[in-house]
Image (tube, rainbow, N blue to C red; front, side, top):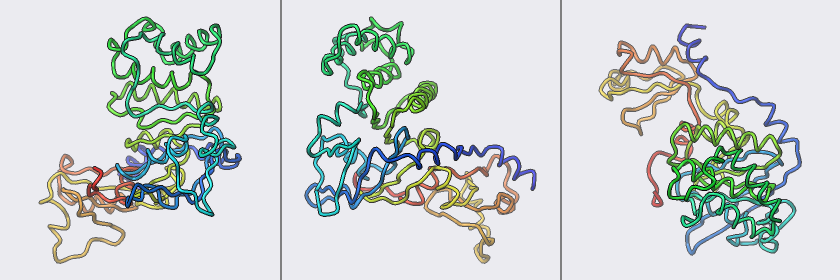
Amino acid sequence: MSTLNRDVEKTLAFRPATAYFFHTMAPPVITVDHLHKSYGKLKALDDLSFSIPASACYGFLGPNGAGKSTLLRVLYGMCRCEHGDETAVDVFGFNPKTHELEIKFLSGVVPQDNNLDDELNVFQNLWVYSKFYGMRKREAKERIHSLLEFFELSEKRKAKIRELSGGMKRRLTIARALLHAPKLLILDEPTTGLDPQVRHLIWEKLRQLQKEGLTILITTHYMEEAYRLCDTVLIMDKGRKVLEGPPQGLLNAHIERFVLELRDPRGAPAVRMRDNPLPEGVRYDASQDPPVYYSGNADRLAELAGTESPGEYLIRPSNLEDLFLKLTGRALNAQQ
């Protein structure tokens, strides 16, 4: 193996397969078969099927308008799907169409936007919410204290919501969703707009909650977030399932291992080699500017870069974002 290959190999972070196989052996707690949902002529969900085992972290990826939020609303009973002969939706043994309240009691939901009460302080936001679930005073106080400590918000218990940073508000919103000790946590874009430190803290807390047995559903546009957190991801586009599986397994099966990026399109090999085909095993993606090249062999990409100075190109491992763009395209759709 060449020095370049060894260097690039060191940057590859493979998720352990043990967790994935453990979860796939467990019986599913959520099952969706042939799900459809339309808004007029718009097909938001189109023949969608999947199942999720207990204590798994399952991610939904897709461009805006792919149907991710609609899917979560169906699972949570906030949106009625179209029931055909083959359609079935089961969430912890309940049908969202007929047992919406039971599913809500078993679930904690973190919406895209924080909807905390600005007139109340941190403790009061959780205290009021505890009343919705009929929690006893002592039980509620103990649970609130535990969650504030878990999310490192104990010192802010008397602070008004307007005094909190964006990261603190997000952590409080997640704490609120966990107040009644749900079996299922649903997170819709949980770390959008947060700085890296807060994002990593939330990831750490979610991993810990999953280890304690919580089943987690997540939609995200951060491919690194999906890769680090999810046992399984389902990539959607225009309401349909495009691909499903463990993140690293999907990368291994559906995209080349290495990527060559160029800063200046005038230095692209395709420009220098107009009359010669690219080397065997190299794929050229002209939809980016500058274009990018993919190959299973890093040395082949290094040869392709030729005499370009190191600062003018980058050879890196492919990632979930590369696969996502390959499957769903780079052009913006009408919803973006």
